[in-house]
Length: 295
Image (cartoon, rainbow, N blue to C red; front, side, top):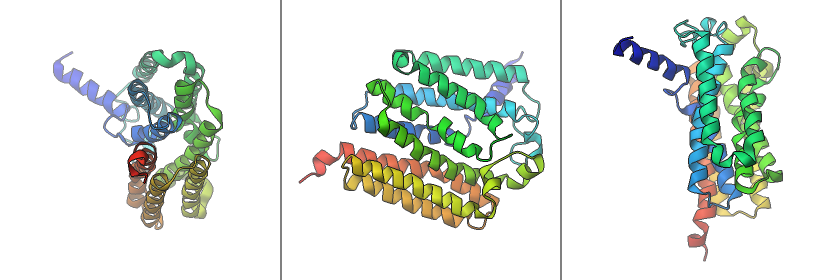
């Protein structure tokens, strides 16, 4: 195999893992960082941050490969996905499964320093990532299942830092489920016409003409739960300023999706990176800057 052929193969694997589209990794990483900062009172060990950042990238990449494997017969019929390596038959199913297995093994190896506390949660996370693509065949709201899968870094972070998850960790996971319902419904609105033809289930189809209202209600639920968390922890202006900024971002998303145009819905989905970042900035401001801001 020539160098050019090897490079072409690696490019296909990169696309299969979505390394050229980091938004998915960021949507997994932000709630994990929320959890790490909350559970350590703003002082997470640098090793935990590194482990979870690398693990998030690896698990998201493995999840993308499994997703494309599950949808390899559907994706050729969807405008946005027909050129994906598996859909275009440029990568074999055997290659895809081996790649997903290798990524999962690497993720486990990265987590070895904390595996005693989170190994059982890692197994659940792997199951969620592997099974999510198949929920679109029978579950009316697969985006909710995705919220559990994408947010499972939260209980893992709590367990790694303290040895247990606790009510705060599970409540934060619920907030993330509503956030995922919001942003992945926006994503599903892009493909609604194609998905109807194929016959798979998505939240955009289930919500129907109430899709925009449902998205905004999910944002509101996310922010409300986070607000309750902040109140219970007696957080102040920094934290709630982050929530206010996130609320304004959600309001901007309404202007993008209200006409249900593909370009606007996809732009809103990608813009959720800033929603997650705003909440994280509020947490950091509250926990790390409060000593300097106090009178």
